[in-house]
Length: 370
Ligand code: DAH
Image (cartoon, rainbow, N blue to C red; front, side, top):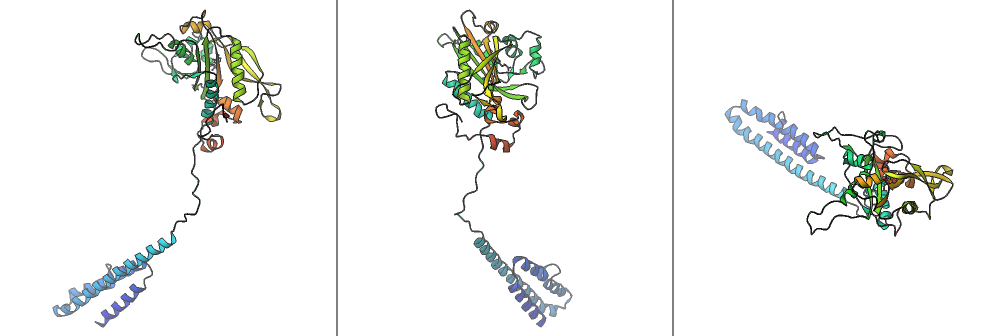
């Protein structure tokens, strides 16, 4: 019995002194675990005579219950103390500034596209769009590309496999097919006599969108963005074309004015066709628009070919028009000094953080574009 008293006194002292829950658990295992000291005593009951057992049984069981209760109490006390300590240590300092939130940014191509649209919108142009997957007819034939003409191959076209009807769709190589779509709509019959017909000339549209060519280097990417322009009206001539483009370029680059020259060129869908160069200054390793005596090729343009007007159901003896094609990414690279076109579509968030625009900086010619 004195053994039990000593054991109980020892265990009680150790339980009271256990510094933390882990130490207490070690004590519990040492006393009540499978090969613990009290479990060992309980095992001895089996080999005792009934008389001995009658005396020792309640004593050992009582010891086990008291030790278990003491362990439980101490555990609750330790857990409460640990929680208090954590609550004291983990206070929030509400005076600290909040960590900055990462903001998204507007991709330069979309910003530049909006800048361009806002300038053309102010000149009375509407925005038209068309699908990225086009018919061979809209992308080439209706634009006066002769059948089997090498110009079709020049565009490094991504063709789809021909469909059951033998028709071969493609990823549009330029935004010019939307010219075709816009002109064809002028011939659409109204769905019912009381519904007004769709757009009649004059047509004044710009067409922003994605275009695709099998090409990749610092200034070419298999996917890039163009903005097509189309004006169809009576009495349209190259003077309108020149004013529109010079005015656009000056506003886009935010300079007083630009000088331009129109170099004869060939596009199947325009006659005459031209490439427009603008005056710039290349000294000092960067291109400055609006000053200097160097030239920079900036866009392709021309008077809409009578064949195209005819193929789209517009009478070339009544209506004339001009068209132009601008590279949106290219204009952005020039304006904002981005050296490699491919970087624009890598999706690298570091690049986007550097060159991206705030979503609140919506371009507006009245308050400034950029
Ligand atoms: N579609 C031409 C291209 O991608 C660009 C172009 C040139 C469009 C002259 C036009 C134009 O509308 O008149 O190379």
